[in-house]
Length: 495
Image 1 (tube, rainbow, N blue to C red):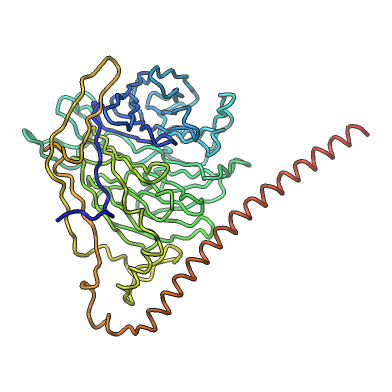
Image 2 (cartoon, rainbow, N blue to C red):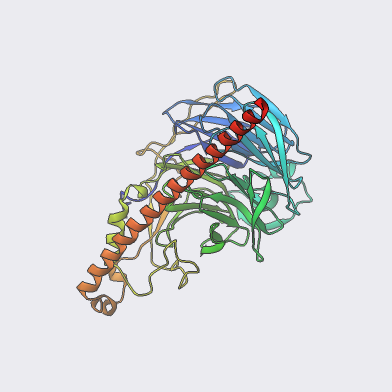
């Protein structure tokens, strides 16, 4: 069947790395894409048609994390060689090296204002750096295990597996290639096990000690702690307004926590493998997840349900990220490919979505994001419609020195290599609901519920505005107190 205009679609894919993709990040202007890989190279891709990509050489071991600065003038990378590098994202790719960790560095993250860079390592510490002076500031210690993520699994050729993984690595499950059977082996860890909050006041981190910790960057103390006794979190991220965090679990789960009331808001178990990465849509209404089961899942957080399953990679998916505007997202995995997707579903007006959802209303509806402890299990089991893309042809450009060309996907041209790309959309039409339930809801009740939904929407927006005003008031009060203290000190010196 043809895909709906609201469905996400695969726009392009890039090839240039020789091993698994560990991290991806969009530039703030949405014109470039940075990727890190097991091949030790960092690559910078232009999203302009037929533009060359640049390969940056400097790290001596696996690159575990990449991230653009908020202004896009710097690009940070972390590596198993125990170093952090700051790159100038141009065709020359000059870089400076930071050394402070005593073990492999797992992730890097810029604060929202770009003044600070934080790094997390297997030495159980988080270190914070000043970007203006490019100097180390302080460390955070409280985790009792590596500040890292769960083991990832990746696939390559037999020769690459032997040289990179070694014969002593344990095996988990097997994948079939065209000519032979390969064993997936425990090869590494996911990236970015911590994040700055949007306002830069907090840092969230996760570890194999089965805890998620919230740190205050002002007093450098751990101010909150979430424990998961089933599995550990591979990845954590703040939602855009900084009130909630999402965790990607080794136990195949995705959890949404409210850090204001220290409660679990939502709990999803939609993957059949460990979840390696999550990314919030800039609106905060959607969350995309990447898993070792080879799929991407898109969750509607307002409705509390799974809405899309995307299949494009031929092995585990290790990383995923929305662009800053949310119109695009990208994913990378064990197949060494970087896939670029167009979102589409975020173009729906939320009011229209609410009205459409009221038409298929039933009494056992899925929970809202603001519900603490959902009333019923999330309805992830349902009828699945499959949308397949058409077969096409791939056009490649020749390499030139360190400039690697991307492999581009034209809407009318697509290779057989990408033909398995499938979109699976979970739908709930009126026809799927019991007719008796539909008839049992009077029109007056429907109108009343619609009015309530609109009022709740207004209330939610009002609370959000009040929170922003409260934050601004706190900042102004803090500035006033600091100025008062400076004035007091000046008067004391004169006396």
